[in-house]
Length: 221
Image 1 (cartoon, one colour):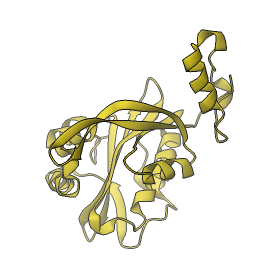
Image 2 (cartoon, rainbow, N blue to C red):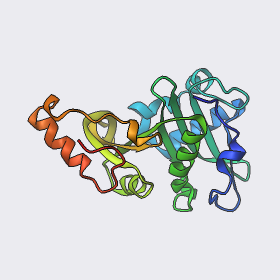
Image 3 (cartoon, helix red, strand yellow):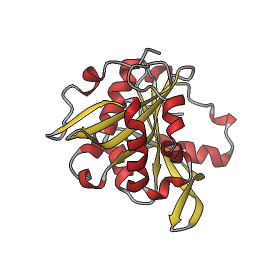
Image 4 (cartoon, rainbow, N blue to C red):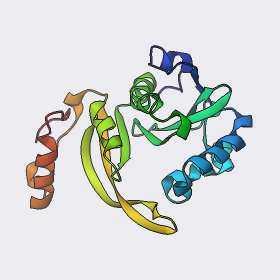
């Protein structure tokens, strides 16, 4: 897979709201970003997203401005010099996949168009680095994120019971269901469908249900 591309190429022609600019996260912005995320989303103190609340995560594992080597790329939106949103992308060079571990928009900028930029940005980024599959895990607490994924051409590939930990109510932590959505960027003719005789009846029923989706971009079994 290719290195992380120039951000100016990635965001060109995206419908970015007036007064907002997208950019790479800088080292000096990390402490402020962590404090903002803690205030915006107090319920992410547990689960996979909670790593975004630790400064060491950014310094040790992410491609901050000036460093393109790490596999996790944080992109921030700024307005009047302050960070108002964050999205992270993670590549797997061996599997040639791209995922988006987290997207967050500050309360004052929700509903202003920033939240819908994640999926088109992800697809542009995936194509730029040579990813063959985009993969996202979506909350089932509300339909909004599911609708965004589906409108962006992602296909429901399954629902995972207990996939992550979440604070479902103040002080109450539970394992929660999440949906997995995918979008194939590579050549669909190179996707090998399983042989039906290799599937149990339960697996086959699920495979046929998912394959029957009208927006499926993988071969039928």
